Image (cartoon, rainbow, N blue to C red; front, side, top):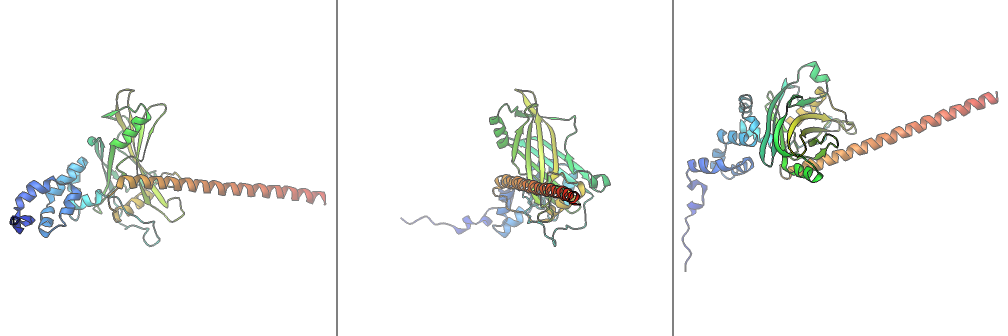
Length: 336
């Protein structure tokens, strides 16, 4: 029996009406899938470049972007929300800084914008946009820190109080965070989060859970304390025993390998280099974020031990020199 005839046109995407593709197919795709679909054909590329598609994807992926200020900022990007998504869905892929490439452009932003979304079990529990001015002397000289909540504010959640280590492990699996740093002048953005926590620690006395997210960036010259820096995001959750937790603190700081928090000026140089840098593949980004954090912690430990050995050797040298001087003086007085 001969196989049924097959019309080649039915296998072509061009056989489907563009309105059906745009309304009933492309609207169901997430960002990475839509980007892949745009590479299939020129027709799909044209349809997938529609700004409204990427605007909806940005708003559904990061609800914090659905504000008048951010909608205006995102529309100013080279390709609008499509460029913003490309910048924000990936992390910077930076090589260690070299002499020729260590200085970013001189157009320092007068402000930076943080768009933050926190999810628990894929449900939004916290969303906030904070604008930080970067032109004042206070910002340049003070330790860099961005706080999303005032000291007296808290955000109720459905997160159960972590009464044991198993609950903390569940928190590490179910809590995700996105912290998008936006340069409205340079029209660039980058995500500073590891998406999933790199550590979860429960305070032995207060019972608060400190959840850390991290992004490690290259900083200064090789061997310096800022060769690598950590953009550390800490979410502090507290609440009564047996009850639901409240988000009490969400902050961002930039720390060097000596554990020192960098000031605003130095932090902005490193962050701007990340904003202007290339992006890496998002495949396995959660595992890679935790691995890079663990590598950073190991480098910090090795640097601390090397510093202690150097200081110990200097102390021994000073003691030996003191003993030598003492006995030399004694012999000089004895034989005088």
